[in-house]
Length: 495
Ligand SMILES: *[C@@H]1O[C@H](CO)[C@@H](O)[C@H](O)[C@H]1NC(C)=O
Ligand SMILES: *[C@@H]1O[C@H](CO)[C@@H](O)[C@H](O)[C@H]1NC(C)=O
Ligand SMILES: *[C@@H]1O[C@H](CO)[C@@H](O)[C@H](O)[C@H]1NC(C)=O
Ligand SMILES: *[C@@H]1O[C@H](CO)[C@@H](O)[C@H](O)[C@H]1NC(C)=O
Ligand SMILES: *[C@@H]1O[C@H](CO)[C@@H](O)[C@H](O)[C@H]1NC(C)=O
Ligand SMILES: *[C@@H]1O[C@H](CO)[C@@H](O)[C@H](O)[C@H]1NC(C)=O
Ligand SMILES: *[C@@H]1O[C@H](CO)[C@@H](O)[C@H](O)[C@H]1NC(C)=O
Ligand SMILES: *[C@@H]1O[C@H](CO)[C@@H](O)[C@H](O)[C@H]1NC(C)=O
Ligand SMILES: *[C@@H]1O[C@H](CO)[C@@H](O)[C@H](O)[C@H]1NC(C)=O
Image 1 (cartoon, helix red, strand yellow):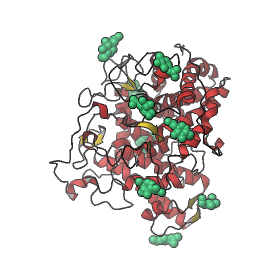
Image 2 (cartoon, rainbow, N blue to C red; image 1 turned 90 degrees about the vertical axis):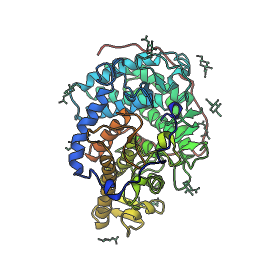
Image 3 (cartoon, helix red, strand yellow; image 1 turned 120 degrees about the horizontal axis):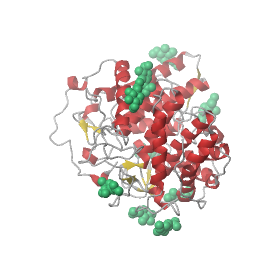
Image 4 (tube, rainbow, N blue to C red; image 1 turned 30 degrees about the horizontal axis):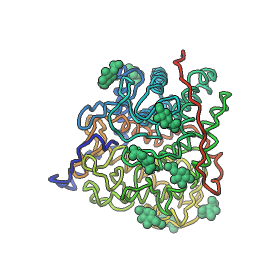
């Protein structure tokens, strides 16, 4: 995130080089780490949500604060994106039956907080024509942040819609369709209206740095409209804006360059290789989908080719990656050209690299085979040197060898996180590219959420389908069609 708030410091300068022995620290049993860190990560999230969160005094009920850090950097705000992603992770736990019983009331407080947040006039605009929904961040007491910032950020409404739809589908599955309609649909309708109306306008990306088009934003927008159309029907409503989903999918194809996803347009003189793409892939993961290139499913040849290009771009630039060769997991960051806070590996990026592979393992298992193509063979060859192009059935020795190697590779990324997690289990935003020590905001809510979703996939817990299998084709010609939205003031409903 958040170049705006920072002083750029280069931690490379004067940093001690890590010795190989130092690099091997804290490599104890991964399973034990996961067990312990799962509890700490969940508590880490709860600590950052108002009004009871231990580290965020002053935050309103249900407000997800990005980090308790108030200086260098000051992240003591609520971002619509971070909150949506975090609450989606929590709602998935509720739906999977792995949650603490008290979690549902917190989710309801989040819903109520968004009723208040949607109507706050802010520098991006107001609710009356939807423009205010694109505001990236608010004060923790749900008032506007009026300083200069990279705005608007058009992924926020889509991510909030996805979180609310996940909770709505949970309610429907538990016979509470009318509650989903009265308490959630008005909020969801505003957010889906926003996506349908504004998807084709420039946005700041998820790192708040590039104004243009962002793969992550486009992917989240597409997903929200596909699941939004189904949700509208389930509560007896309609979503006119959802009709532009095929146009957004068409735009999504424009980021593909033949071997990698170029995450930003314009690239602002960067390669365009960016965690943006891998984080998108894990959030458009659909356990009911095949290895579909068009939606960049985690097991698709495109997403695997992109994973290799992305991961390899960090192998030689971080000292902490010394001694780890191709096919071995490494620490990864936002993008190789990053300089923010020294330009370091990020916990949430390294966890996303693992999560994409756990997702792919789930998809191969479900479809009963792995299809290696010209495009994906460089990814597989790093892991299994004699891998061959073709379809390898689940019953084959090759399938077993490949899936074992991918699992080991995925676990390797979690082991890297283990290695650079301090003994108290706290997950900051970054860890030093030379020292491996925590850098930037402490207790980053998104870092904890990233840990929980990666480990949930490793544990075999997957989200509900968002309807990706219903997406069967891309329009032959892309269009910039949009639908004017309708926006109405939501009200807090009784639970
Ligand atoms: C994953 O499974 C381990 C072992 O059962 C468990 O301790 C941990 O809480 C689980 N974590 C998540 C996030 O599901
Ligand atoms: C459930 O959540 C509540 C509130 O966050 C907490 O006090 C309690 O310890 C949790 N219980 C378990 C078993 O995790
Ligand atoms: C939305 O309303 C704001 C005033 O709140 C105005 O500045 C802006 O131009 C309007 N945008 C559109 C797309 O109508
Ligand atoms: C909300 O928080 C901001 C930032 O801390 C503060 O300036 C403002 O006075 C608060 N507003 C209310 C209504 O509490
Ligand atoms: C608008 O849509 C067209 C057609 O897909 C695309 O080429 C263009 O990049 C889009 N612009 C933005 C800002 O989304
Ligand atoms: C972002 O780019 C668009 C298209 O070039 C431009 O209209 C808009 O003013 C830019 N926004 C900012 C904040 O610079
Ligand atoms: C796509 O981008 C990658 C990474 O920058 C680059 O290595 C590759 O040459 C590009 N491919 C094409 C066809 O431009
Ligand atoms: C495997 O992928 C290739 C290339 O996309 C395709 O032509 C072939 O039909 C696929 N095979 C199976 C069994 O899916
Ligand atoms: C690849 O090599 C392994 C031994 O390293 C062997 O077990 C496996 O059968 C080989 N697979 C193929 C497709 O040749």
